[in-house]
Length: 382
Ligand code: SF4
Image (tube, rainbow, N blue to C red; front, side, top):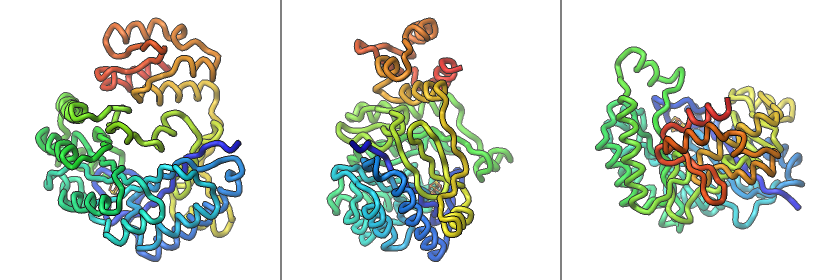
C-alpha cells in the first residue's frame, strides 16, 4: 500500500522585501517568475518518477516568498503538473500562502478552482505604523478584503500569521491584532515571537541603535495576552506557536511535527523521506541551471539521520505540540523507555510545573513550560 506524503512547493518571489525577512525570496520580473515555474514543473516530473510509485500526496503546501505574487495562471499551471504526475488523495489538505495586497478576485478564483482549500495569510499586525516599520506594503483593510474574497469562493479554512515583539510594537497593537482576528472569525492563528535573523535590515537597524527590541519580559507578557485571548475565544493551542478552533488544525504542519515523510520541491525546499534529510540549493540561478542542463534536482545537502538524531528530533518536535511526547510510540520506535531514561530531569520539570505526564503516558509541556521549551529540550537532548 502507498504511504502518505506531504508536498511542499517553494515560490521564492515577493513584491518587496520585509525588513525582518531571511526567507529565500526576491523581487522578480514576470520573465524570471515564469522561467522558475518552468523549472519547478520539471522538478515535479523528476521527483514523481522517484516517489509516485510508493507515495500518495496527503497534503500540499504552496509557500514562499509570496505565491500569490505570481502572474495569473501560474498556480493553476503548477497544480496541473502536480495532478499529472502525482497521485493526490481526494481529501488532501491544500494550503496556499498569500499576502493581503496581492490577492485579486480572479487569482483567488484560480486558486480555489485549482484545488486550494486552505489559505494562510501574512497579516503580522494591524497597526499601520508597525506594518510600515516591518516593511510590509499592505493594510488591515487589504487583509479584510482578502478574507471576504476567500469566503466568497466558499473557503472557510483560513489561517493568519502574526508577529509578537517587533520594535515599537505596543502590547495594545498586539492585543488589537488578535482581537481583530477573533472578531473576523479566523479559525487558525500562528503567532510567532520575533526572531532577529543575521543579515536582515532589521538586524542592521538594531545594531546601529536605530531600533530597539522590547524586553524579554514584555514579549512574554504580549505573547501571554495573545494566548489567553485566543484560548478564551475557543481556540486550542495545539503547538507552541499555533492556535486553532476545533477542526481547523493544520494537517500539513502535523506531518513535520510527527516526523512523517515530506517532499519539498523548488529552490531551498527541504525534504525528509525515510529519515534522510535533503534540501535543494538556495540559489535560484543554480537551481534553474541544474534542472535545465543536468536534468536533475540541485540537491545541496543530504544526510541520513543517525538513530540518536532521530530520537532528538522526536523529542524536540513532539514536545512542541499539545499532543506531547508519546512514550509508548517512543518505545515502539526506539526500544527505549523514555520515562526511565529521563526520570530525574522529568521529575525536576514536573516539580517546577513545566511538564506533566498524562494518564496515557504522554509527556506534555504546560503553558509555563512552553515559554522555556527550548531550554527544556536542550537539557533533555544534550
Ligand atoms: S512577504 Fe514573507 S517571504 Fe516575502 S519578504 Fe516578507 S516576510 Fe519575507
